[in-house]
Each structure stands twice: as structure tokens, then as C-alpha cells.
Image (cartoon, rainbow, N blue to C red; front, side):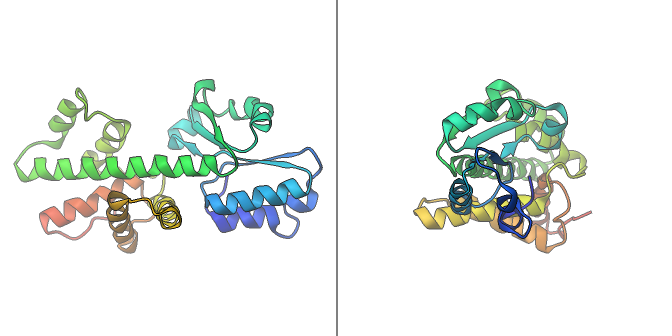
Length: 236
């Protein structure tokens, strides 16, 4: 599990990489979040050497990794997935380890996951901005919203970070930026309409440009707060 597409390519195709030492029958499991197209290309290269590749990106952040409760989304051959299931189940509950479809399917599913998170982060940030503009305490608003249909893991965890300003990274903004870039690239390849993701991506880009790339992705809310309050973007 490494940060970006070029890193995976280097690990697999690079000098003394996976392909150089791959034995027939071996399974390569990539748990990074990278380009679905490159994933398919790498899977073909692994297959040419007699091996099999699974793309198995995860969701759940640092807490999920520490508690072995990650959600794992898997693409590749289903029979190979069944062989690898015991390994993947060490990192996530059995019901959270899901076979999706052919090679690249896990990566596409992870991008869908990030699209949903982006929309949720934007919604919570905008809700808090409106609450504060009307003199309300965001903590009380959050408490009320968690009891209704607005409740979400983003509201529960990131919503609290936005209130306390504790942005110790569980998932870096710069990696969130990378994932949204991959989603936009996938959109360009398929023609899917993604106006919400496109707008949120610009807010994330602005936050990284302001120097906040090493903070938790929840910190992106500070862009909304800064615009609403007419203040500089807070990146510390």
C-alpha cells in the first residue's frame, strides 16, 4: 500500500521490482488507491508472468487500520480473491471485505467512496457555516443532526474535528486531493457528470495550495469557514 500510481508502477515494474522476482501462481495484492486504467495494465503484466493481481484499496482510515476494521474493495479474478480472502480478512471484518468484479473494479469502487466522502465533507462544512452565521453553536447542531437522516460517519468523526479544530492527520489532505484527481480523470474517460466532486476538488486544491496538505482531510472545511467569515484560510 503506497501513495500514488507512479509508486505502484515503480514497485511492480521497477528494477528489482515485483515482476523481476514473480513466480508462477503468485498473487500480487495492491491496496493502494491508484488509477483503474493503470491497475488493469499492471494486472496484465502480472498475468503475463504467470501470476495474478488483485486491486484491494481500503477505507476506514488510521482507526480502521489499527482496529482491523477496514473496508476492503477488491477487483480481479474471483477465484484468486477467495484464495486471498484470509489475508484480507486480517485487516477487515469478513462482511467488510467485498469482491466487486474484474481488475480495476476495486479502484473504481474506492473512487466512488471518495466521491461520497467529498460530498459529505462539503455538506457538513456548509451546514456549520450557516449555523455559525446565525449565532448557533455547531456542537449543538451536530448533536441534533446525528439523530436524523443527516447522520453519517463524516458528521460523526470529521464533524467533530471541524468543531474542535483538531486536524491531526488520519488521512492527509494531499492524499484526498490525489484521490479526487483520480475520480476526475475517471470522469473524463467515461463522461459521467460530477459537478459536486469537481467543486469540492477545487476547494481541496485551494487548501493544499494554502499549505494544509499534511493535515487531516476534515481540515478542508476551513476553506468554507474562511470564505463565509471573510478570514484567511487556517492551515495550523
